[in-house]
Image 1 (cartoon, rainbow, N blue to C red):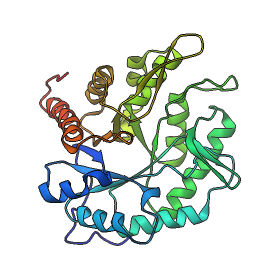
Image 2 (tube, rainbow, N blue to C red; image 1 turned 180 degrees about the vertical axis):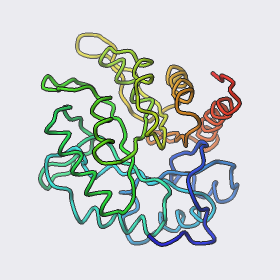
Image 3 (cartoon, rainbow, N blue to C red; image 1 turned 60 degrees about the vertical axis):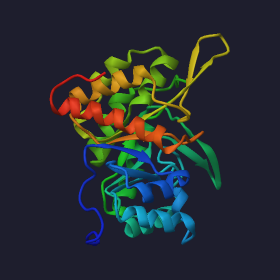
Length: 292
């Protein structure tokens, strides 16, 4: 890969808070130049050749580091990876030189059909081999390390033969990839499946985490009346998720942290305030203070 352009922010994404880059905020970001660590984009939104999205992204990329987050590779699928999609991804990385690239531990396609969702997979030896082979192919094609995000799920698989933690550890061992820890996903799963979220964070292999995600969730009820959380990225981060985030940083140290808000996108100042709250917790960790 060629070196970064001299007029662009270079090197690693700093261990600061960033936000998902949304068209609603393009002009305000360029006008105000807010003090924020970085921005993340969804790769699939920028796979066209030109247009307003690229115009604004190019201008913002001149001022800020960016991270690339994929949602369409279907890493967990049983089919072969879409080579055309991988090619578009490689071109996008060459164009904007993101410091980090991540994808989901999920599947989202079947044959030539692409689904508008990120679907779970059972943690078995078979799926472990599939996911590992796909990650190897992605990293070899892109010539860079990718981060794999832990999922939010709404059901358990009877055929699972290992825990999610063990599955992730083994993927890292086999492929050398890194991990993206989505703290909201941990909390959503802990409520939906009835496990201890704090214990999950304590067991998570934070030594491999290159990025953390925080987002909002919706409260619903299952058919039997039990609590059901939906990972909708459509509101502020909930207080229990902030508490888990503080716990995660106590183990991992400061990490690049993204505020995800993809639905019902708020005014810039609301999103920026969420990022500032994350920055305060990161700063507290640096000084060994606990910030709730």
